[in-house]
Length: 404
Image: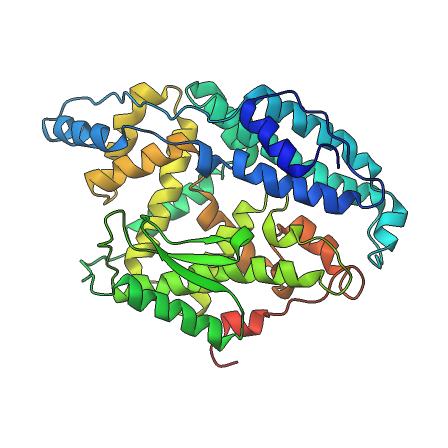
């Protein structure tokens, strides 16, 4: 690939014009390396943030308690990269993906995959990253936020939203004691990794939430921004199943191509896999019996918050109205504000429940564990087991059935 990756990163950081050419000999390897680099620059959760969220929360609570209308005055983080340079590079890479030929797939022992399909696979990844850039760089514009969000995460239908609304009325919640320390949760993560015999790192970091970092082969336990985070035992069990699920799909994806040298892209990022990723984690919570009412309540609230926002015409004017609807359904003022604000960053909270519903209907769960894939691409890569890739090292039986 020209220029070299170190030079490419410097060009992106400086906003300089980039001309790129991938190898005709190893095009999939070069494209995978380019995606790895670009993920750090483009992923929405790294580039979109409401800077004054806490201040606006306090103002919202005051207005709400006084029964006055609240109109948010959100200040967004500036997009930290040069939009034109990134979009131009993504366009070039989409064109370069046409260099993938049948001979390149044959080198990885492909059985059924056609060159045109692999071109589409990489082109779809790059188009998703392009949407991330457009969303983040236009986040202040409500129409852009709505349009690009719904292109990345298509909204659910009214029937699904009504089902969640009905479920909320049937769930009884409690106040849960938070006594589990980050150190204890880290041990729970490590014990689960040992149970399934999976080599993956666990680290504690001063962050608000737990998450998986596939490119570092590390799952992170949140210590809290001040190092004082605590978890209820119910939440700790849930997080163990949920976050390790994300790690498993990454791990399997990295392992899948080891024998043939196929790039580890399916463990890192594939086209529009977010709904299958979060939905599968919820499905695991359900199947392992660690789903608990307070979290289930919150998942339904998330879906309704996203759906209601997708239906509004004027976000600024209707922000408080949507918050009040969530409060009427049982949310605290703080949680209602958080959910609506988060969806204003990226309108995607409906994918959790919608994705779990998808997993319930998929018969071949192992197919979905080959890597971080949605159902469409999981079906295509399933046909390559024994060819370009191998079957999942960590299986559905191991992660969904404790008696295995």
